[in-house]
Length: 225
Image (cartoon, rainbow, N blue to C red):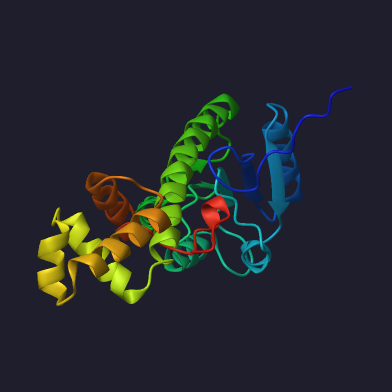
């Protein structure tokens, strides 16, 4: 039998993880069964605090949390996730949802608020849509994190030269701006292009723009930038 290669932990090709948080054992188990019935991986927690204390931070997936749970509530979880810069989409479910809590949840970044009992197929359809969105986000995250990692390889002088190259300046103009010889700028330019793994000034500009958009640690694709 040919063994299938393991899926990466990070990046757009990572296995989706559906995180389920609910203190109601029956509801939590039902959600796990529902998610696994369509071949998705489910990881469940009784409390939001248990999830927050874990190392589980998938870059592809969705969080489903009850609104009212002991300790950190569903709303509290949204607040903490936003404060930490975590952008995994969150669906909030509740048997006692009211308009004020629903509006508050959406303002904190929840993608949906569902009242129990909810339509199972609608939830599964929503999960698939959100998984696709997080894959796209992970792909962009990888590009920006890798760009920043390359820029971080440069010395301070090489970064100065990179800045002028990104503006489209030629070696002589850069030499005049930095008070260097053209030969020295040529050496720095070669080092910049080599470390950034690019060939043209347009490439330099695009990579610097991508690096400027990098946020977080780059964990989304396994890059520690």
